[in-house]
Image (cartoon, rainbow, N blue to C red; front, top):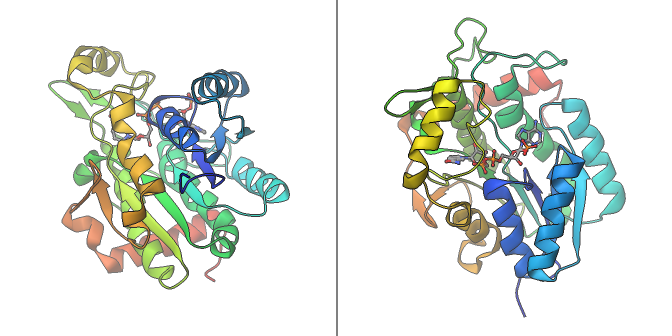
Length: 293
Ligand SMILES: NC(=O)c1ccc[n+]([C@@H]2O[C@H](COP(=O)([O-])OP(=O)(O)OC[C@H]3O[C@@H](n4cnc5c(N)ncnc54)[C@H](OP(=O)(O)O)[C@@H]3O)[C@@H](O)[C@H]2O)c1
């Protein structure tokens, strides 16, 4: 019997791309998959496809807009009303935007979806993850994080917003910054969770053909993403490391690491700066109105 049978797994952004393929694979293994999406219609369409392909009927659909901290808090409350355990949390949803946009709660959109959202969602579900231990947190970052910088005095990119640009290759500085923050957050989180039975790892899925970048609002990047399609891996391939970290027995005790192609990988020197990780954590808590435990 698969070790994943009946394991309750939350997958954010699971109506498309890497998230959908991850949901499909985990559903095939018999996991109880909770697809967390922002759009009911797109979510239902993906859910029906997954049920049809896997024959697994234990798939739930829940709505959460990860750019909205209110939505995340309501989702977490509802999840805890419905479920009394959580075995795997995959923070997969992400976005890349050309123009600076600010959410109604006052957060720059890329920061909200790619970093603040996963931070808050994890925070809200941490008690359940701890009581369900052994359990796993998996954060989907990006190889572009190596180009990122964390300016603690300008996390909202108010002074300098450089969106998605594509010439010979994709340049997305704000996106890269948020993915670097997600990496640094994972390393700090893993340290804080030592001994709890909850692991936290981050991954880089590679260059994958999905909807990412398609709706960034930049014509040049949309065209560029179309041109590079043949060079991109399939979403199924891109999901392999997420599936591995969510399910493989050989990583059950591994924590605080980054993976790519199902192997541990070093990340850029900035990501390992513990002092900066701690400062980022503090600043994030204050932005989200949280206090240290
Ligand atoms: N593709 C690559 O080459 C690549 C490389 C490195 C890292 N990644 C990362 O991989 C992850 C998955 O992306 P993907 O490539 O599979 O792209 P994708 O097909 O665009 O999937 C992104 C998912 O995130 C969801 N999402 C976006 N904003 C959201 C919000 N505000 N609230 C809730 N869900 C939201 C999307 O929902 P909608 O369908 O409703 O928009 C979609 O389900 C992302 O974190 C991305 O940064 C991708």
